[in-house]
Length: 179
Image (cartoon, rainbow, N blue to C red; front, side, top):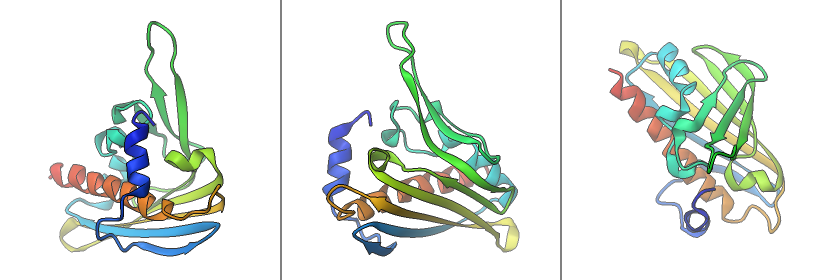
């Protein structure tokens, strides 16, 4: 991450009232969160493919979410390009890979996000879109992580919950702004 001190703070700061870690064990955890938005599921699915519009730049490797892309088809990459510095290619990061793409209904990715990428874990991130009355949509987000984390999952679950909650709120803001 561009801001390792901020990431360290995120790992040890207690969750601010988020009670969405639904399961936690030494070798994994599950997170569930949801929001209602005033846009239809087709528009939300399209917005999911534009993480630069809703992902928090503080939780990117480049420091700018506009460097992130999400190709919402099987095998597609949720990736980030790291901008060139001094004329040299700075690199790129694969955050996750798409394993289920059902436009307007479900987008599922597999990947170890953020600090989990350095551990022997995998995570499955699912966005489920359910139509509501009056053209709105319920977005349910789950992230299930399992594997080996040096020192156990400990405080990671609440930190990951908080960070993913920020992303879901960013998606809601971007969707509601489209109205």
